[in-house]
Amino acid sequence: MSSDMRVEVLSPAGDMEKLKTVIAYGADAVYMSGKSFGLRTFSGNFTHDEMVEGIAYAHAHGVKCYVTLNILAVEEDLQYLDDEIDFVAHEAKADAVLVSDPGIFARVRKVAPDLEIHISTQASVTNSGACTFWQEQGASRIVLAREVSLAQIREIRKSIDPSLQLECFVHGAMCVAYSGRCLLSNYFTGRRSNGGACAQPCRWGYSVVEEKRPDLIMPLEEDARGTYIFGSKDICMVEHVPEMIESGINSLKIEGRIKGAYYAACATKVYREAVDTYYRDPSSYKADPRWLELLDKVVHRDYDTGFFYHSPSEDAKIDSSKSYNKPAFVVGVVSGVEETTGLVRVTQKNKFYSGDVLNVLMPSGYVDPVTVLEMYDDKHNPIDSCPHPEMTVYVKLSCGNLPELSFLSRDGDKDYGINKM
Image (cartoon, rainbow, N blue to C red):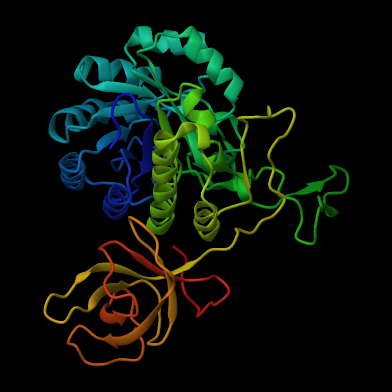
């Protein structure tokens, strides 16, 4: 785990499964949400009981928990706000909350004056003056807008109080709007973008219609599928971790609360290893090719360095492709090893067969692809495949045992009609 002198690896915890997964894969801290007031209502999120359990679990493993209260509130939200703040601070015992709305900020300061407040990227903080303003109000950390460059981060760090922490996104999806403040979803679907229900219409395809010829639809073609003029490339800064740390950033944030546990595990493992590699020998840092291979297997758009090296006016980072790249198909997650038989217990996520050769992602280290030598159902009857979702199977693998929360997957070129994680 990181100390105050080391940069933090901050991972998404969209639900209890992802919280426990990213903790196993090396997160120093997680960010999470209740069922309201957070900007990702389509992730599973946490009931009050689950939040208490999840934060207690994280704290027992030395991991901090930050709860998002970062919607841009409308008037009717306010009647429930104080109770939620009181719960998050005093019952769930979160380490901090993320806030963008000044009204919510003021209520947190009144209801839970000792609770740390982080300013969400939704507040679009892009300069040292804004950082200082929020610190003077009582904030302890600023999540900088994604539009801020590395050069600007270095200047901001020089100009602010050293005690004020800076956080930024280093991996995952970007928004078409300024740090996520978009109304396309409201307009097209009625889903409230800044209330957490964004339908991501920036990822849809669009055409042009001339007002005097409404029946003539003209696609903005760059390829056969059209042009996706709002969709952004994904950020991937793993090859630039030294520059991020040396710029003065305190926390490296991974986007993805609505993505699957496998994505969260891959990204957390990669950035955990990257940060540890840097601190072992900063001068000889080099990205491990295995990191890029792992990140290429999760569902993603074409990777880029975001706006860290180019301003939006120089390069808008538009992804012209509608499709996501090279997903692996997760077929099972290891839930333990049976003591009496030595068989690996697996929770099925997609159908797989005895004899399959599968890739392994595990919390620590690497192994070559493994073969499923034998397979049994939950009553220990021999079976050839596991067709039922979430069924428990016991397998003998060519590598022997695997640690809990290891993922078994098949490359995306072999699709048995299965789901992506």
